[in-house]
Length: 85
Image (cartoon, rainbow, N blue to C red; front, side, top):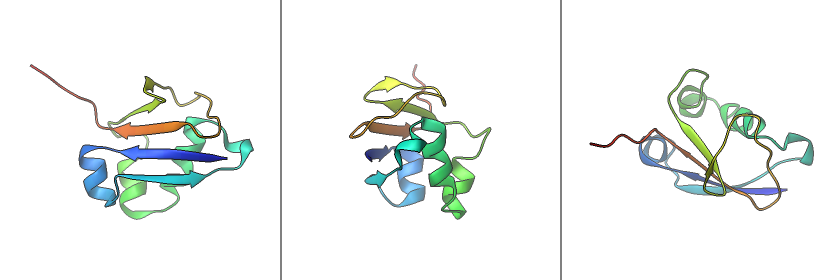
């Protein structure tokens, strides 16, 4: 299944890409598994998406948890938390 992944702010700058389509096996249909695939790239990917790093994930513009399911053609956004004032 194909998942469209969007990267924002410091993640976009660090990865050097703003969006991409990633093909995942149907058996990897959770946010945590997508993040594992991205971390496996190593380098900046592994560091920025490591456990304990501060980032958020949304699936189809709804905030998502690590165990949130993914379906074909979902849009996943990964971004740092937003602060305001």
